[in-house]
Amino acid sequence: MADKNSISDSGKGNVLNKEQRVSFRSFFRYRASDIRFEIVGILLLLILWLVAGWLFMLLPQSVSGQFGDFLPLPTLKALYKLVQESRFWNSVAASMTRVFVGISIAAIIGIPLGLITGFYPTLRNLSYAPTQFLRMVSPLAWMPVALIVFTDFESAIYFIIVMATVWPIILNTASGVANVNSMWLKMAINQGSTHVQLFSTIIIPASLPGILASVRLALGVGWIVLVPAEFLGVASGLGYLINDARDTMAYDHLMAIVISIGILGFTLDKIVQTVQSAFTRSWIE
Amino acid sequence: MKIDVHNVSKIFPRFDGGENIVLDNISFSANSGDFVIILGESGGGKTTLLNLLAGLDIPTSGEILVDDIEVKGIHPSRSMLFQQPVLIPWLTVKQNVAYGCRLRRDLDNLEYRVYQFIEMMGLSGFENAKPASLSLGMAQRVCLARALVGRAEMLLLDEPFASLDTFTQSHIQEELVNIWLSEKFTAVFVTHDVNEAVLLGNKIILLGGYPGSVCGMYDIDEPYPRSVNTPLFKEYRAEILVNLKQAHVGNRKFFESNNSFDRGGVDHE
Ligand SMILES: Nc1ncnc2c1ncn2[C@@H]1O[C@H](COP(=O)(O)OP(=O)(O)OP(=O)(O)O)[C@@H](O)[C@H]1O
Ligand SMILES: [Mg+2]
Image 1: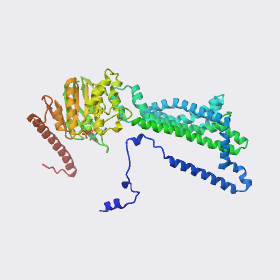
Image 2 (image 1 turned 135 degrees about the horizontal axis):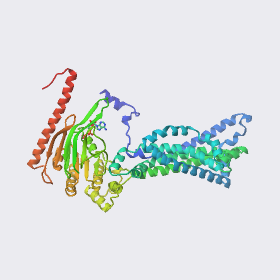
Image 3 (image 1 turned 180 degrees about the horizontal axis):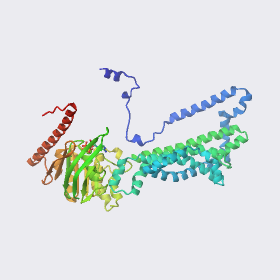
Image 4 (image 1 turned 60 degrees about the vertical axis):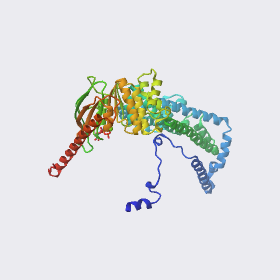
């Protein structure tokens, strides 16, 4: 009796009262978040920005100084002007190219390494500590090294982006491989699969969703280190534009570039996420 | 393929550090082209024995010879149908059925053979479906189709019909027997169903007791297709049931005598 009461009387929070939808698919599928929440979230961020700027304006002029330029209105005005400049679009193109080239190099190095270290336990155990160690070194710490090793700034930036993105790609690919259902492997070997076939027909396809996820992660990391890497001394790119705006004290301009970096990164991530979830779904359905 | 199992035992470590003797001194042999049934109760070590025959695991002691060569690992000539269906989720039914043949470059007439077996398994219309949309029994039939398309010399089948309804079951049993009669492969078929055992096997190995050992062996030379209504069928069935029951009682005695030791040696019976 007591048991019965406790189940029927308990509040809505009780797990037993909730219907839960669980399926085999939920394991694979990346669930895209609801677009309505995203819009409201962005609006909240805008409001926070307004409030923070307004609070700063309450401070005496001597302290707040040029903070007026950081407010949404001047920033958006500057952004409107910015997108009409060809200099801006050239920089966007330069930055994008750097990220894509850097991540491509990291993927070419990282995916095979991840596949191999994920499959052979000895290699996995051997590589674990070095990978974790190198992963923990900030990619920007390599900057001086990059400048010594590479004579041109462009290569130095690629090097930094590769150093930033190759570790998440290796680790995520390897964990994707390590999680491949062992029954698939037993079945494939029993059906006469060679080692190469095991990789081409089971391990690589099974890891594809994980590999895509790792590339998405790498894109985020790469985009973040790109801006400081472009402080290095190149004469193009969004990081260069920020430096330039700071030097000319064009703070509304600076803020507009910051915003556009956010928008571009967000859009890139959305694109990869869409590809990823569409692919993952078509993979098993 | 000829099978010789000599004094095979399999011991697994138990969670409490002890030993779980699953197979104890198993010996039997079968001729090439036999339909061997391994019959026993749940948890009796049937899957374990099949894994040993497939080379997915190695015996703790004893040896298994197939065509006079010791089994030391997995080989595609001994095709295994796992108890749980194993399908590749990103491949369609058709591709899953063809999977093994593609690996082994066994391509002649493959498309036709694949469709033939899909139809035989009653899965027409599902050729391009992905495994996620199949029921358990359907998935198991896709696995059976994959095993049959492969034309392996030996098929190791682990309760392939356990999740099928009676009608589909008897239909596919019939098809399996027909293919076996025409292709002459060696079959090792695990089941816990006495009727199924007598319907299909020409050699039945009874696995029973604790630790699991061979507690009966029957050669059934009845022609196929067999019917459950013949007197001979009923005779075999009754005898096997008696034998299994004895093994089961022996099993209980084993536990009871073990327990009575703990309680101070009061022995029943
Ligand atoms: N990998 C393993 N490690 C430890 N113990 C195992 C392992 N595989 C099987 N066992 C044990 O071996 C015994 C027999 O298992 P097995 O799967 O062979 O039974 P079965 O006859 O196939 O049963 P069922 O009809 O339910 O499939 C069980 O007690 C089980 O706990
Ligand atoms: Mg079993």
